[in-house]
Amino acid sequence: MSKKHGFTLIELLVVITILAILAGAALPFVQNYVLESRISKAKSDLDEIARALMVYETREGTYNSSNISQIVGRYLNNSPVDPWGVQYFVATESGIVYSSGPDRIPNNYDDISTGYQPPLALVNVKWVDANNTGAVDTQNRPDYLMLQFSRRISSESLALKTPATAYTYFKCTSSDTVENMFDWANFKLDNSGALITLPLANGVTNVFTAGSDTFCVSDGSGLRDLASTTANPGGNMCISSQSVVIMSSK
Image (tube, rainbow, N blue to C red; front, side, top):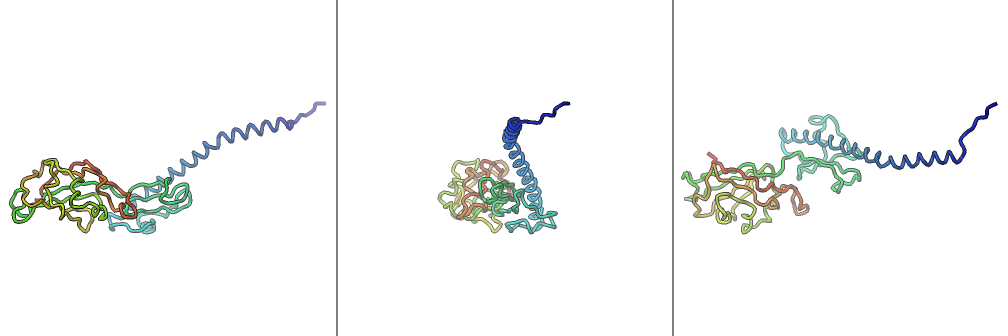
């Protein structure tokens, strides 16, 4: 008669110990995989929401809600929550939509975000012959430049630039004396928040040539979008050294 032998207690303990070691070694990999999967899901959701916000702003104007409720139904099929069970947030002044991330705390180090508005950049520069002389001058009435930006500039940002130092944030290829080319005390930001009117200084003549000379923001930290406020000095800095040809408005 044969005898059946089972595992001894020591053998079972050895097996259990080995399994525990293997499980412990594999756990970080599993946790990293789960985290990466959740981050990928959040990024996918954010891309979809950003596209919906872009369409909304194209059709209906500036989006002003801190959540995505206004685009659900018309521009977004459903109202997703992030992989950690928290709603997605919209930072309208920064032009981004974001998840509060694994810690579920918004505006923290682990936030995951994507932009739905373009970066702040100078995109168009036009010379306006305000006195109809056909030349760049200030005869009877000063000519001026119209600086068009890709998005709104913070009025607080401009207010911090006194007329004596505002010129340090711009550069024109035709001259190293930008300080003296324009009437910095009277530059204006229009109601759209994205257009600066910059008049020539009194007596200035032919300091640039439309169609060939260029203008740019020489210091990106000098101009910021509406994310830059007294309470929030951060924000989207203007792309610097992106030269734009000065064109005639006619």
